[in-house]
Length: 165
Image 1: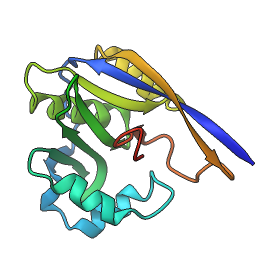
Image 2 (image 1 turned 180 degrees about the horizontal axis):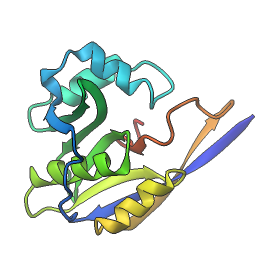
Image 3 (image 1 turned 90 degrees about the vertical axis):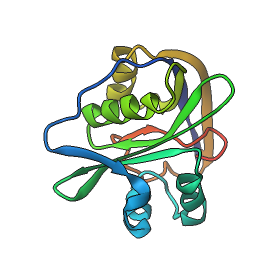
C-alpha cells in the first residue's frame, strides 16, 4: 500500500499575532533536548534526534518553544534562505499558538518574507496562513510506501523542509 499527501508552501510577511493566554515562548535551546525530541516524535513517524539536535542548535537560527503550564505546546524554527526565510518544523497545539510562533519567528528576520511548508490536511493551518497574509506559492506531494504515518496531524503546521521532513 502507498499514498501521498499534498503540501503547500505559504509565503509572505505575516501579520503579528497575540500570544494566547497562559502561553509563553522561550528559546527552545534552553529546554532539555529529550523533551524537545519527545515532542518532535508526535509529528514525525521515526525518532530523529540526530537531525533535530543540530537543526535547532545552529547559531543563525532561532528556535522557539511554546509552553503552557510547563508543558511544550508548540515548537518552531526559522532559518535564512534565499527567497524567503523558512519556518519549520512548526508544531502547535492550536492555530493561535502556531500564529504566535510564526509572528515571533518572522520578527527575527525583519522586512523579509517567510515561508511555511504546510500539509493541506491541516485545514485550520491553511486558514491561519491566509489570515496572516501568507499566500500559496508552491505545491508538492510527499509520497510514501506503506500505511499512513501515525502522527499528530492536527498539530503539524509545517515541516523543516520538503526534502528532509
